Length: 84
Image (cartoon, rainbow, N blue to C red):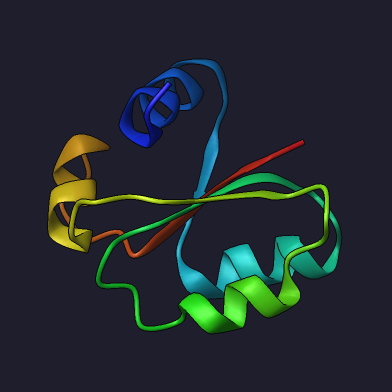
């Protein structure tokens, strides 16, 4: 399954967390199951270093603006996560 199909499935089944600060807080608490990064996300290294081993990180080929449109949000989405 490609990352966009996985994202679509997760958006239907779970309530995602949007944004860098909210996602970092959830990562520190160990609540993130899956992490999606837009292709132009400026904080990729930060997420790779803070993510626990059981957290799946998927890099999307779309830009943050395209991810925002895909998620039906009126703003760009650099990072979104699916929490437990």
